[in-house]
Image (cartoon, rainbow, N blue to C red):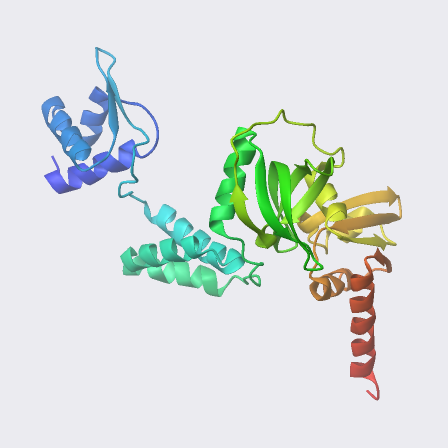
Length: 309
């Protein structure tokens, strides 16, 4: 039989798997008597772990959700995955919550795992941070969308105009390094997308709505056209373009056997101009004017860089 400390840690690790554990199986896995098992379970409850028990011959134990988050046990692989995931989440979103959780995990990480997490981060290229969205705004909108509750918020459009919007929230979508809310604007009676970093003062009045059918082209395609997004026509089959373009930031659809169109909600025009040029096939920028201008600037810079060579 292992010592009390090792046995408790092993018990906690087993319970965190999320399954129901018959008492006899738990006792056998721990090499403990049923009486010792019950005593260890009581100790976990005293420490704040909500362990639910089912009595009877087929009795079992399960770790359930409680009022507060108790300390968690991670295997080596889980710890590495958590640290690496939080590191990239903090880089990509700038979320202070991700950064705070990352620092706590890194401080507790054993030396043997530090090398693995640092090696993965060093060998993986990170992305430039997206425009920061307030985590409280993200949480409030997500909760309201799940519960089909109306929301109201202050919104600043791309021209700097501020307005109070009343919206039925449906989805939060990451497109082109920015987070967007897809919702139905109650005052305009139309589908709209809103950049989360331009939303503030969210209020949930408590009224609910009957969910509508989402736009026929899907969330990604709608966000591409609904945020003043971009459209590019490629003179190549969709399969060829897909090999060189990160289509998850938008929608890539075939027009015929030899052409396709890319629609995206990205409004980082300089980045997008480079990304579509890197595909390496003839293309036509259909809009917006900002992307057309950035494409001309890119072409001018490329010409200047090779003049006299």
